Length: 234
Image 1 (cartoon, rainbow, N blue to C red):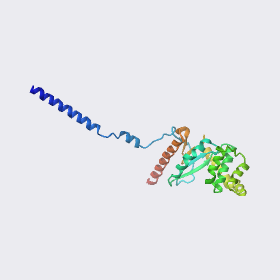
Image 2: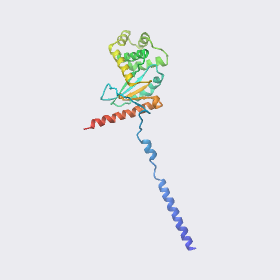
Image 3: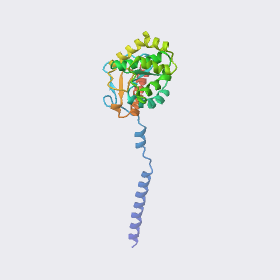
Image 4: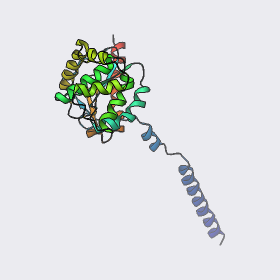
């Protein structure tokens, strides 16, 4: 009887020790999920973005260039504007954001000239949304210079100032350059974003316009890291 009691106590102690050990292990926090959540996101070339075969020279090599290729008549571009506008406002100083109108045909070339005319007149900030709204909400075609001129005049632009800017050498040069760069980028649709003349990002690959900007942020960081590495190299 005494031996049986001692055996019972021994087994009870084993059970208690096992339970205590199991409880102590369950109290150790599991950081595996948190570590995974905090891990840096990596996007893949060919899956999330396209690497250009031949990098295109950027306007300002001292900064990381981000070019948004768009068309005023594009509904996707119209819906992208309220997404990209706040993103652009928080870009750091080492990033140079460049909106660039696509040029595929005579109509898009006319609209590119319309964009650079507004820029030449220092009225782009005021007219950018007006031009988007005219084509996407008011459904105006804007396929003639006279119709575009009327739209500018309604915004307080002098007729002569418009005509001079619209046909100026500066605007014509910018239109030609945009056409050349769009062709070199291999733009397939709008909106698309080109990072530092090397990578092309579109919603067709990312799945959404919001994720486009996440991929662009990733690529900007890649280029920033390369710049820092080059600066510290012996």
